[in-house]
Image (cartoon, rainbow, N blue to C red; front, side):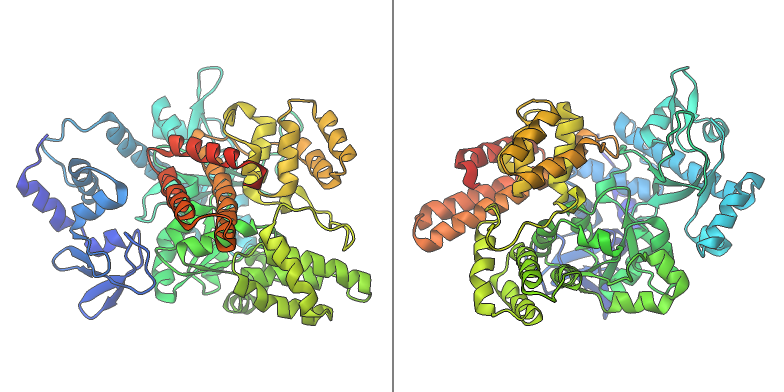
Length: 604
């Protein structure tokens, strides 16, 4: 179809280019121009400039330039017509010859409208309905008054089967497309959320795309005797991707840009508490672990990322992934040292200044993890210090930088009263051979919870255990860099009963793998996994394995075991295939990288 030049000009005129671009990257006003880091190439100093009056942008680094339509085309990989349609929708402009718009686009507009009406309906119920009294009282105990409830558009889902779908007259297609409900086994439309406080989730432009629901404390158990999950969130839909969405980013982005810092919490109430405490730059993941796609979003708004988790959760984050994301996205990850047992919501109510101080004094991720090891160690005996040293060195060995490791090594040596010269060879060995078993003559391997292991491998193992059809043919042992997780995967891949696999691991001396598998065997998948969810897990696991293999290649290059031409060609080819994991060629690139790792064998 053709769109008239007049309507194209109308769309450009109605689109604020600064507002459009700041949904993807932070901009600051300098004189009459707006500047920021270019979203089209990696850089540390801002070279991207926007002229708001003319509706144009230009990068002095990579030389890209364009207008509102060009920006949407490049950022979202759209053709010209679809980019104009998207901007026309944003501006409320009807394109008169737009009859050929695809069904998917029309469906998405219908889903967004339904979600917006649902958020308003839930919100009105919370503010006015008598049955929401307990919800209002509970929110007050968490420091959330009526003003905050209005600011964050909080709502209430009544304890009725079809109150929402009946009031809004939602069709089965809309229920499925938004996740607001479903058609039950009796062919009746039913609400997805009942008797829950509603936390609406918006995209960066402020459009409602999903909801999260929290059950009230003391809620009765289900008919089958099981307790209701504390939180329920919208499923992945055409308008909502949880791994690319951060709760409250639409409200927080202005202060994030101003401060250069983004605070990441675990829960919705933690975010609201941060706002109340004078930290209106907090966001939260939406029922999923912090992942690379979240970092891709955050890097465009701030370079300092502070994890405001409780101490146990922060310590269990997948360290190798965090360091990889720091380097890949040029960000600094720090951890707020909250009092043991406290979360931001509790601390903000009890001592808001303490929360502000914890954020201001957040320490680098590696320092936090080392402090956790050393602060809980028994340093009163040589044996205790040796065990602490081994645990601390394993934490240090996960960091990819020799220089950073050595700086912290001095701290470890001083704290444990051990000669640093005795520690350097050991940490170097661990860094070079992360899969090597721990020396039995140094110290016994400390036991750990399954949840303390790297999260991508943990998710993949749970999928292999409880939904093998979702990962059939996609996982190989070379994907599992962590030795315990690799042993477990090799065991369960044999297809034997789990009890038999655990016995075999015990007999082989892999007691930690046996214990972790025993723990996993009584767990379950915490949610339904879509194809995209599975691909995200496999992609992250694959990236970690490739990163380990690339280190081996670089080491072989330095030692002369590999020719420069062959090494550079391999590195270049692998990086190209890694880049393709994000696009339409993701499936074939995954296969190529998997075959490459398998061909490398156990050293990959």
